[in-house]
Length: 154
Image (cartoon, rainbow, N blue to C red):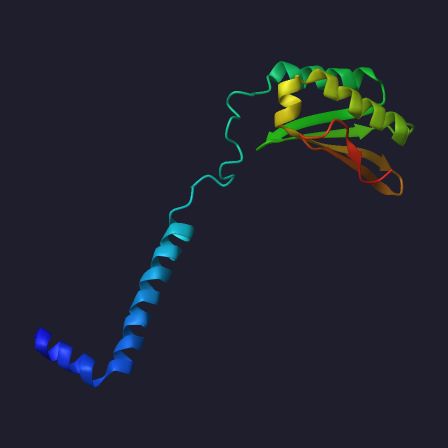
């Protein structure tokens, strides 16, 4: 049987080389496909959440932030939720609250978090006013590598 294969290769050298390269290419593509698409993590966040168990934010911290905002007298409602490594804070403000004062209140809430939490989590703020002409929203974000909130709309 090997003699027949050797004879066929001798008689069809060009085609045999192309066939061998095609087989090699299919094997390489199969390995790449399996390792990239099938062998990945089942976690939708990948490895971005590594270490989150060591830097958990307690419920009491969230309650303290909510209380601080409500004590300012400028907010009607506050909600905080954690998704992945981002802490989302939504503040619904009274119509007479100024944007600058609302930003100050939101920035002051960062003092409730520990240094480790500030360096691990990103913070996203939504300041909302429900006006007669619709809803106004100012968004701000604080990346874990920066110290201040960057406001998108003022």
